[in-house]
Image (cartoon, rainbow, N blue to C red; front, side):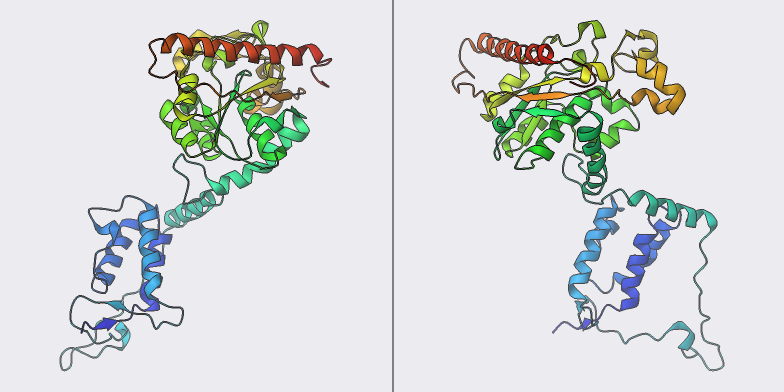
Amino acid sequence: MTKRTALSAREIDTLLDARLQARSRQFRSKLDETLNRIQKKIDRPPSWAKGGMQSLEELESDLAVLRKFVSSDGQGHIPAPGPQRPASLPRDERPATRTGEPAEPTKTRPDLSLIDRALQSFYRLRMILRSEQVDEYGLDPVFFDFVKPIVEFFYRKYFRVDVKGLEHVPSEGRGLLVGNHSGVLPYDGMMVCAAVMFDHPSGRIPRFLAEDMFSNYPILSPMMTKGGTVRACQENAERLLRNDQLVAVFPEGVKGIGKLYRERYHLQRFGRGGFIRLALRTRAPLIPVAVVGAEESMPMIAKSDLLARIIGIPYFPITPNMLFLTPLLGPTGGLVPFPTKWTIEFGEPILLPSNVLGAPDEDLKVNLYKEDIRDRLQEMINGLVKKRKSVWWG
């Protein structure tokens, strides 16, 4: 019979203490001390001891495994690989090892330095709006719940979005939302997703595919990722659709949000039809989405190629928001849109035939379908603009 020994509450506290020392200068030494203390009590080394810990989640996983064997009343046991050792007395109660030789002095734990305490406080502060478990695309549920009321404020109070045709959005199953892009920053993608999330009976959360250029923004990029946006590529979109999710795409891409104000509500070229091939491969219905109001919320009156090359982005916009709001709100004023009145219309779903892929005239048919979707979306936009009486009041 293999002898079993209990993992004491003090050793569990040591593990938890090592976890709390994360990202401080003493973290590595704490892990080494913890490893030496518990390695004799478990039948395998922890994952973070195999050539170095790779993530905090690995340590959390090991703690979860240990907690399974240790019950709340302290009676749980963990098998030990070696022979049973007698329980050790505290250091200050140990007898002398030799006659007349004093016992080993108690080693007191050194106080944390001011820097270590500051690092711990900073770490805990950062974790207030961060979850340690995100989905495979980076959506952070804690951060998402935090920004959700902010998005709803912009949706209902700031842009006062009117939504039409929500009955065309499926309550379950996959779907590809195809919209027009505008407004320098992707507020339109956020509002399209908000329309489904807040006003559709299912309350589904579409995943918005964002262009690569937004990954160059140091603050905006992680916020968008944690808020649910996904990097725009065929692989990500196909995986989402095969998992029966709603995916919002904007085929104009950077050309859409980079067009000048004089080109407003005129759709740019829809690329090479990648979204058509995506819908054909996944058998996902295409749902046209017309957005009116975003063009005036952040109109681009000029571009600076020099600043764009310095920063490393496709274009550097010059907008009235920068000219009027930056003096009032500081450097972030240029990111604040004007409170224009928005209208979003969802069109009837379009299911493309399944015999296009692999056909001799595949490229020709893909191009025809692409232009047909573009023409339908342009008609929807023209109709909404024609009915609108005011940029600010709809």
